Amino acid sequence: MTIAQEAQHAAHRLPPQAPAGRLFPISPAAADLYTVSVHWALGDAGAALDAGQHLRPERFPTAERKARLGTDMARTWRAWGSPEQTAHALLNGQRASPGEVRDGPAIRNIVTEPTRCHPRTSGVRELHVAVPAPPLTSCSLAGHEHPVLCRARAEASSR
Image (tube, rainbow, N blue to C red):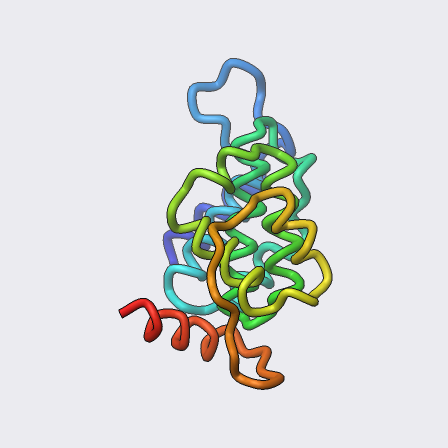
């Protein structure tokens, strides 16, 4: 993690927006988003959420980067066990670039989970309308709202 921290500190000495025409447009926001991804990949959702807490889509110049913010934060919120924030992060990504959320298989799995397991959670219906998922049976554990249990049940039923 030391290299990522060094990159983040160096990036924060750069201007908030990279100058036009740069081959590699590095900005403080880009470094922070990279840090979110690193922490998520290492399994530290809390550190990833901390790294991404001040990131906003308007800090990124392209629709793809704005969508990446949404999908990376959705992965992190999912790992944290928060379906409402997961749905809202996915909606933000979908608004920026629908294809980034709709077409990637890994992200589609994250989109499908709240629809299947948390249908009454804020943002989930809107997510389902924006990115329709294939019909799946919902979790039948009475009153459960735990994403890990839901994933385990869905995986077991698909075998």
